[in-house]
Image 1: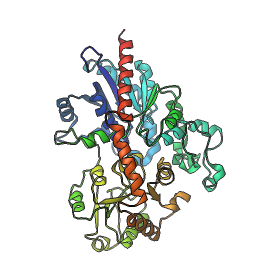
Image 2 (image 1 turned 30 degrees about the vertical axis):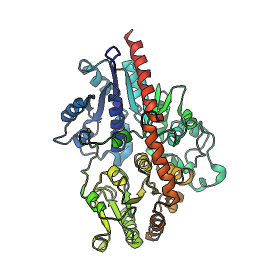
Image 3 (image 1 turned 90 degrees about the vertical axis):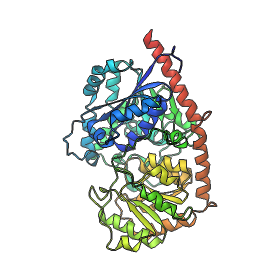
Image 4 (image 1 turned 135 degrees about the horizontal axis):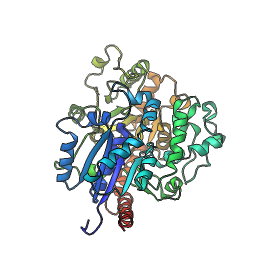
Length: 488
């Protein structure tokens, strides 16, 4: 960027959860590479878990500086007691973080001398209180959607759906074709009521009113960025998000760095767990496209009974698998797997606490992904050309699962869960769907052919001349215009 141009400064505020911090940090690096000074705000609770020695915030800032990217990391208390389980009691977590606007304003005002004047705030779509922060600071607020475009449209129109009586969702009637939701803006596929974020299934859910409030604040954005790409969800879809403001697809935000990875790249893990790199060596010993990768993300939990049924289904399938069994996956506690399970699957299956997911999905031995269909995992799988088995658990994951199965046709699902999210998925159903996926896991499968086409489309989108690359350039130019107007 020429020295005559104004110095851009973006304040980036993700929800303090791993699945949101991760894409925010990737987007931050893409903007920093375009000349932005980035202030990245975490809560102290997440900062202490993400920036582990020797990679503390100061060290990471220094490494980024060496790459020509100007960052500073700030943090503030989230207002919860130290031992509060955060997202495991999600309504208390959200109630706390939506009260952070005064503290955030003070933090930015007290550190104003350390950075150029703020050009814009880029806030998580779920961080509603940032609307007040941007207003006090007198800067535009861009919302960054870490969901699919169609799920984002459904969420930002929650108040509209409530006023029309479409939420709370009647789950028993949701599967009827006549109950498809076709009144949402944008050229998105019809939405099943059960595709909507799971908190809207009961008015008594404390998250129900919280998300209605959040959706009201989403409507007040000055700009919107979406972690998707035009070839996956077209420009016609994206227009449904606009309240009159610009909306740009900029994803997959992780992909440019992945494609350009080298020993000199600035890599930082936003994981609350340590990656088990031994799993990559184990994958090296497996046949191409033979391994089913299983992970349910960083938050979702299951009952011990469900984990045991899943384990026995994997065992019965006779398929090689790599399974991420988080230390808190069993309703916040360590998993208790069937007696003798580890010994019986030894050599064919590998269990880890956490994995370097992108490297796993890119490995030639991986032929399928059993996933909760969180948007990060879904987009990563698409970008690596890996077909999916969807096992949605909460949030907007049911929406993503249906997109993969019915719209993009790159996966299957656990059918019993779509009809009843409280059902115990049996070992027999697990065995059946795993066999079906992995038996068609060769290069000739229709799932894989379509997934590989989307992989190439994602690659084109983030490279120079691609839609997402061009949209980030456009956003940068728009912010230069704003900076110029602010300096007059």
